Length: 318
Image 1 (spheres, rainbow, N blue to C red):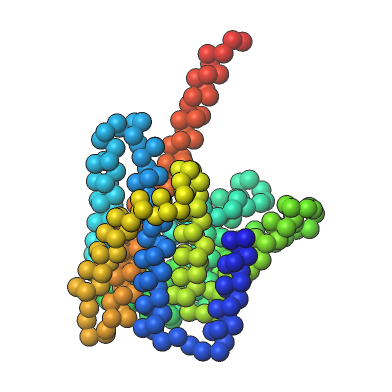
Image 2: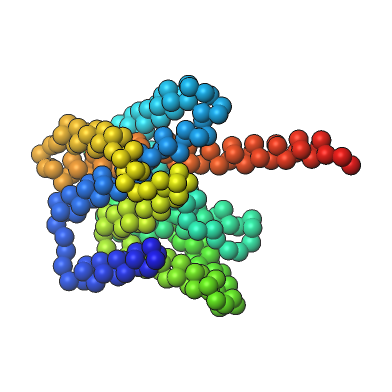
């Protein structure tokens, strides 16, 4: 149902894009609003995700350790946009694609290639605009990092665009493998695979035909963040109102921080540039510790399970 809703939304926006063009200031305002309402709560739930994983190891120290590590990574990302914006662009884009891919449905195909398929699919919201809207992406990055030399941004965009061509081919191969698998299967499995392929095709078409900011809004807010919040709600066994109440304070703090950054960064270019800059810098600062937490925690849990299984196996009678 969620995938079908995103498919319909994508094609509605594609149709709307053929009829009229939103001013940059309106797009920037919508971006900031939806990231604040949907995107930031997705990251603001990290303390709920971290507690059951850290508290058994650290006891009452889990919260200061979590907050200290989170703040340190956030500060490093913000410093990166100031000191080394070109490197930060590359690292942030590739890390985001890796994180998005881990949150996508499991791909089909050879087991050794599945991590690559996941990475390629997760980055479609990045690869497609880099290839189709290169100048627009370069312009957005120039707004986000105005102090960066133009040649440094150009070099980062050129490197990422070269990677994008190869990864789009990988994503297309994964999409075709899944389509062939759907043809060979029947019943509910076929429907799920076909709807998922329709979702990927719809999103890629959206990314190619509308501006990078609009495509990012749909993918990040309507797909990725909603899936993450729904998964966390199921894990915690809470209703939506209870979960929303627990996320209100950290979300409000994050919105206030981004608003402060926008106000401090306000220049002659106006509020639209300040909003885009503050949203992306603030979002990247929150995103990096978020994706590290969600990437490292499952690996640690798998390691613990494997070690426990080895111990149990060694202790079992022959």
